[in-house]
Image 1 (cartoon, rainbow over the protein chains, first blue to last red):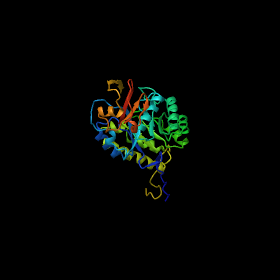
Image 2: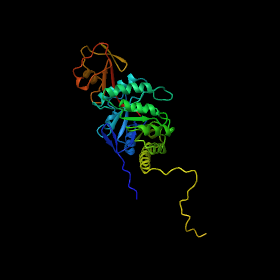
Image 3: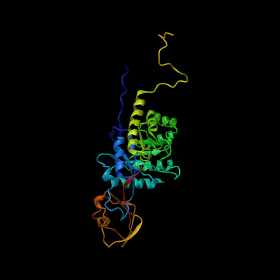
Image 4: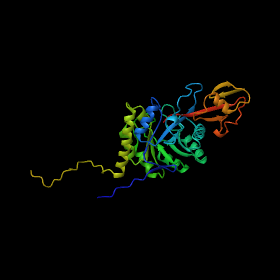
Length: 264
Length: 66
């Protein structure tokens, strides 16, 4: 019997995670559904957005961070909605103040409202500034292997290429690019965006990714809590399959039952 | 004095502190971060920080996002 390949845990900014699934907190019906989906997903890290407080409205309403406890879950503030480096850096600094000095952030600088494709040049500028300011930057980017490497060299602690546009649910459209990114990476590579259903998450993990980040695939599923559970299983399955090592692809058949001993 | 809070103009008594404003807005219990004229005012300084006429105040919190 061959010895089992030992998995190495996912470590981000010095913290070890049992789950390789990171979930978002957008697009849910309410906080309760969000929390239930989070629990079903097994994720230990959840993204949040930073926005203006609504003045005079919903006074005394519970805050997201009252429902999803920063003591229990790692909160990953994002810079969603930022279209330039300056806004992204400013948002991260507000997030750090909001979360009492917490330095882990998800940097995303968008380039265009229709595609929500990353603005890579502004992302590079923001990443440099944030790393210099002591942030632990997990960066959303395109699936360009050279840019992924550059972001790693800048000092980002994880590089998160898209599988497909944000919220599109189109799956991993260019697995070969993800493979190239993985081959060169010294930091965790986490597919962020594009996952539509469980098999997409499995594909990402079978490629050897260190994790998957998703929001819409769970929040906009018919039953988000059930889909969260499916995603937990999918990420675990994909990781196991990657550790196991898949059989080689062959053009022609190869019988599973022996030819020897046939009696006809 | 006039200040702008999250894009809305408001009249405040002269000499108001940041914490007085947060009390007025019923925001002292929740988790918020405050920036005045693009400079973050750490929570530890909310009590003593004096507001000035023309201040542009941003008060943010965490909401759902991906």
